Image 1: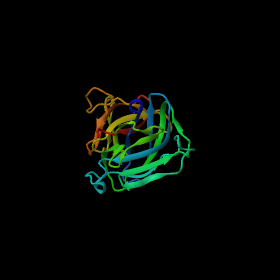
Image 2: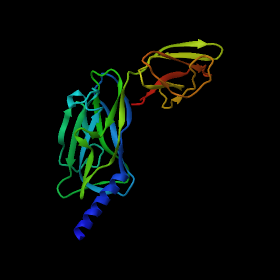
Image 3: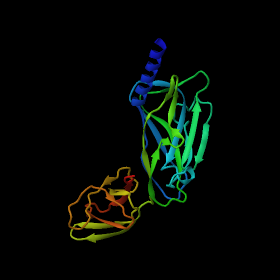
Image 4: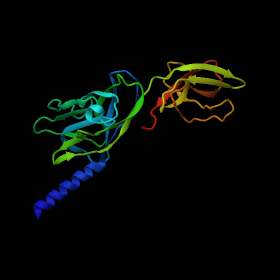
Length: 263
């Protein structure tokens, strides 16, 4: 009976850790036909700090693509770095795992040195840096998941595996928008036309100088007589025209800001 009680306690502790630890993948936008585009994966620990002895990190784009038996080919995962800036930076036994299992499924792991641990602290911490390659991919939005065909991402704890709550993200492949034209619409508006990618959300921003670090969203309308709004506009793949108030300053710089659409 004592042994059985001990097992129940361990199971409760593992469940408590899972509830407190989560990895929420980001929604990112990347350029088409471009290698070497990286993003960070972060963990959030809402409970107490705890020791681990290793990590098994799996990540997948879409359903893994046709090479993995899926149906959706998307960006390739070129590399995963689980060392730089993570708890394993100075305590590891080198990389393990298969690396690129297929272009859209990647496995990387490591263990701490013998008889040592590292600590997952409270709050946010870096898990990995993932590098994507969109060569051959012109546009589209693809799911990012840590619940892969090779299994889920996990930590190796002193009392067994620790499975964080895993939340999917997305990667949207879209060309940088270019402004095709600006025309005056008296008495007080300016029409701005730019090319869009289907599914991507767009907004217009302005600044007084091109070197400024402060770009602010601009009120706009979809026709010269409509009320102005800050709502984003969804791209269709065709040029989009929005109407802005004529700027009071002698010169204003505009840019188009894009964010991923719904995956």
